[in-house]
Amino acid sequence: MIKIGVLGLQGAVREHVISIEACGAEAIVIKRKEQLDEIDGLILPGGESTTMRKLIDKYDFMRSLKEFAELGKPMFGTCAGLILLAKNIVGYDEPHIGVMDVKVERNSFGRQKESFEADLDIAGVAEDFQAVFIRAPHIVQAGGNVEILAKHKERIVAAREGNILGCSFHPELTDDHRLTGYFINMVKEAKK
Amino acid sequence: MKTGTDRVKRGMAEMQKGGVIMDVVNAEQAKIAEEAGAVAVMALERVPSDIRAAGGVARMADPRIVEEVMNAVTIPVMAKARIGHIVEARVLEAMGVDYIDESEVLTPADEEYHLNKREYTVPFVCGCRDLGEAARRIGEGATMLRTKGEPGTGNIVEAVRHIRKVNAQVRKVVGMNEDELMTEAKLLGAPYELLLEIKNLGRLPVVNFAAGGVATPADAALMMQLGADGVFVGSGIFKSENPAKFARAIVEATTHYQDYKLIAELSKELGAPMKGIEISSLAPEARMQERGW
Image (cartoon, rainbow over the protein chains, first blue to last red):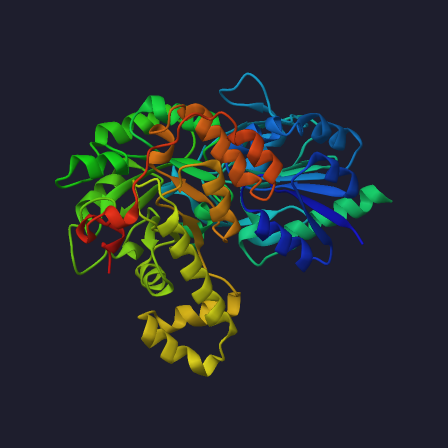
């Protein structure tokens, strides 16, 4: 069975676990870097990216996370997770994990009262995906090898570069598991 | 495109799970909290222990303080409005705070009715001591809960009582037959539909943090162990001897609440926690938890 980890330092971990299990894969909450060896793919959940970063450093996760990506094992970042994956962050000199060739802007749709739900057309996934955006970032620039999967009001909100998938919104907050399913297929392909 | 939906409001609280929300009274404290790994800050004019000491009427903070904190950090900023004070809540919403706490820490403006929180685009967190109170607040539109504890005391005993009570009552509802729920709703003073939802979900439909008395890393870990989704720390951090160190230790203890060796390590030489108050020494009218209906 495919094993998908969810980085469990902070944030919407339980929702991703439910979504992974609904797709027929095994979910493992990752609290220690050693656990990364057990899994085929990793989801970086929504939460507060600054908090997660502090805890990633504190528990010496950074090098292991980079190695995980270098091994070609798939990673999927949602909202704060996308910020952790990006190589460039508007207003910051350094990225976090920095394995996806995109530039993201944090909280780019505004504060919480501007948070919203919208229907998205996600290439290869769904034409009618209900996406929940919460103090969401968006992709300002994408490198040449990045495939743009979805836009909302001309802003890139989902993209894929090789084995790395990222989105601005929270697929784990609805019962629509198609994007998680898409990621699990990426993991199956990578494992072949 | 829709803003202010239940999913967006509840989802915002989901993102805070496993985290610590810290009370701050200025930009400098807000930065210390963010640097320590807080998932949000609560902007206040005074922390609860100072509200107790000052006496008189406690109101919404000066908007200047809230604004200063909002400008200082990139994590979400919460602020407190008095129970039932429609205008304080609207003012905070207009300023763009990310979450409003309709809070018993402030002096209530209405002794009969809480805010109709469904009418707002901004989400609300409210306090509770039992499932009835929790369910009434959710019924009014609260999209996040926190057990009340006894704010500003540095004494965890009330927080323990409340989180145990709420979770025991949730377990009871989950285990009940459906035909027993209406009577339970009547006894609790809770909306029937909400109890049905809790039974079907097997848990509360919104995130429930613990608050009111957390003073040490072990206190924070205790609340997580008793089933809280995260922790509010009020006076505990900035009334301690070494706030930055305390803040970091409380964040870590919350993340790894079952790693006792780690909690031992990070509790070493923290300096003195806030002094604390024995609950029985508080006059009934001085208990903030009794506010709210």
